[in-house]
Length: 395
Ligand SMILES: [Mg+2]
Image 1 (spheres, rainbow, N blue to C red):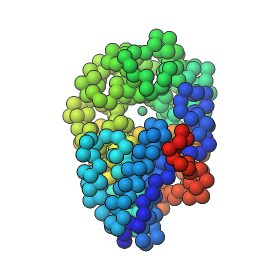
Image 2 (image 1 turned 45 degrees about the vertical axis):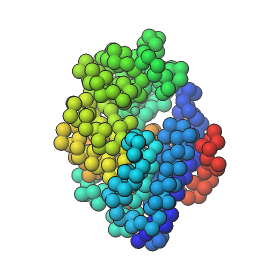
Image 3 (image 1 turned 90 degrees about the vertical axis):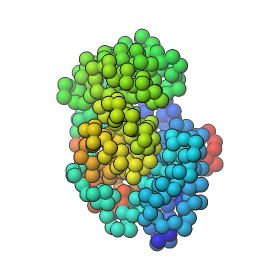
Image 4 (image 1 turned 90 degrees about the horizontal axis):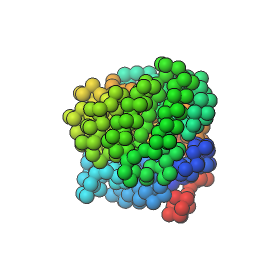
């Protein structure tokens, strides 16, 4: 079997996924990047690199995917490890983070999808077989901007059967969102409002529901320490990315001074960037993103590294149906799994992209024995919402 064609898709679907969060990008729609790998046997594999930050980055990832595709034409798609090594070394001469590794991830996921379809097996059976029968999820609430808005959202999620959600109650009030790290400080009013919102959320869901806090790597060391410790009073399950991802020393300083568990890793790329986390004891949970860190091949390896340190793994969701299914396929086989991130408890935004709805019940994703990823992207939907001239502001 030979690879005959590799192409990227940038699609943008109407989806009010962040109502009320006007400072976030595109509150009324959401862009997705997929990769399609075709073979001469008529089998197609799907990958994804969704939610790379912004249209320029989306185009960069798509361009890298297309370049890898040129190299892979004529290659045997079963040679997943060899292709990973070849593309990784070829693409990362000046560094291993960013769009190149994301493109490699997308292709790797598609190759595992093809392999599963060829063998008639779900990917989890190719990775050693399942150690569980469902994948526990956590999601994000609407309305984390105020105590008034978080309460109905939190109750709705709990009523749906989920047992955990994650929020960043600071983010809606930061003036420029994720780009705001200048001095790493947090405005006192924003901090007070965030704590009120967290208190309301805790009150709404009761003492046993897991509330995760995402700091999005926005703070300096003293600010992160102060915020994490104040939030620890509300029994948060983890405090995520307290400082930007570049400094292990800063993370170490935070880890040593806070009374809550630390999670990090969505912006760490490949197994090598996790070595200092494990060796330095810098996190209680890790959260690599399957579509950013190196794909299914890499996620399985990082999970096994974490297992050796008794660190639970909880894959990040860069938000897309292939992302969720790829992470879930790996986590079916991983003993040290905590929960898989998903964007909303309601999967309707993802389901319009795939051939059958994802099976989510009682806060868990139930996988089937369908081969490969277990889902097929709907090409009519991709064509309908494809961003033409992906280079415009809508890309
Ligand atoms: Mg995060």
